[in-house]
Image (cartoon, rainbow, N blue to C red; front, side, top):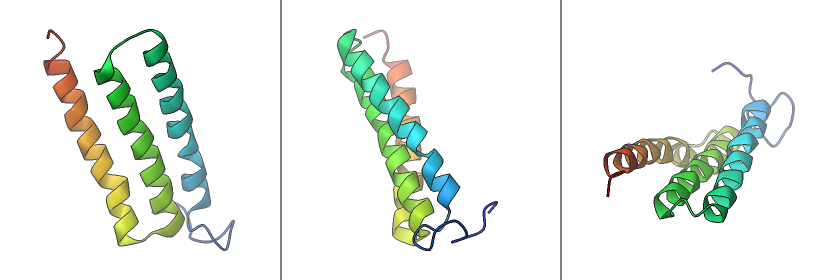
Length: 93
């Protein structure tokens, strides 16, 4: 791990890792709004929702460093990769 625990805040284990996950949330929300606005389809919206889930789960993990929140960090990443691959394969349909 590259960041010392509980240095910046007594309540958040890895403060900067937790804070920078906010960019995932902001960019995903921006993507969802634009995908709906430009009618890009449900597949794109769902991919952005997966990215939003990755940002939230990763922030939870870096805030607590617990095993259960580690699953919230890693599993959405795997699911998003699978969903992205599926979206590319099914792009013609």
